[in-house]
Image 1 (cartoon, rainbow, N blue to C red):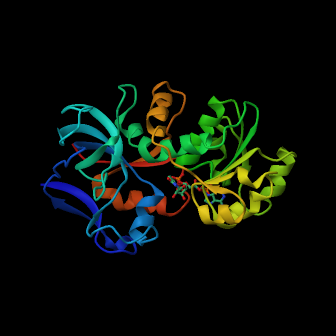
Image 2 (spheres, protein in one colour):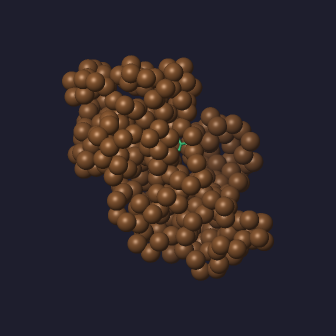
Length: 303
Ligand SMILES: NC(=O)c1ccc[n+]([C@@H]2O[C@H](COP(=O)([O-])OP(=O)(O)OC[C@H]3O[C@@H](n4cnc5c(N)ncnc54)[C@H](OP(=O)(O)O)[C@@H]3O)[C@@H](O)[C@H]2O)c1
């Protein structure tokens, strides 16, 4: 038998539990892995709450991104073999917070030796999102990127990608994250009341691009700072972004491979700040569900 963390009904965390089931067998185009680490994302609790639809069959395995070692490959898989170290998005109906899971070969890449399993597990969702958010609208070196939610999993990586491109990065986050945000090379600005005045004092001409990782009122508070509202991209709250004249983040298939290379060369650190055992997955999800996580949180199955 193999352990997997699931939710048994839509709603709160009381519906979560670790269960045993037979290790899943790969279908066509899938690879089975022994999980070494899984990333925790806001999507995990949003799916459980039913915010992203109710089409998951129950009990629904949790966790969208994972890294591990291939144990079996399905029909038609040519790029991976048993024993390969990989990272990828979990297959539909599967979860990364598990001892064993399935990845879609089309959204799996080889894990470079230089990247730990823990860091690798943050790449398929969080790092790839940071890559897409900083490439959807191309800035020139020296132009200004404002990151709303700069201290979270996606934000810290987006800030570092901005530094690689020589953008001026303004990172908006709460006071407790000042050092963390500044460690990326970004200029820190405290979130909360008065944030737009603080940004104006720092960059009177306003940013050339806003990447939103928070949404709602915090996004409304800074939206007027950018001259051209089409230069607002939101990963967190596309509806509010569109209402304000901006647009939703568009995800691309090449982001995962590209950002894996960047992390391999040590240019971006995923900033995994907390690791939990699979038995403690509920605590890991709760830490992200506060909405105030610092960097990334991962879940590690026991040996
Ligand atoms: N569309 C996609 O494909 C996609 C993929 C990944 C993520 N996302 C979404 O993108 C968002 C960010 O994801 P994540 O993984 O980075 O989440 P995260 O790790 O939970 O980080 C969220 C950050 O938002 C900050 N925050 C909360 N309220 C704020 C405010 N008023 N002003 C400034 N910062 C504030 C929090 O820090 P403070 O303590 O500083 O407030 C926290 O660091 C989530 O909504 C997630 O669902 C979308």
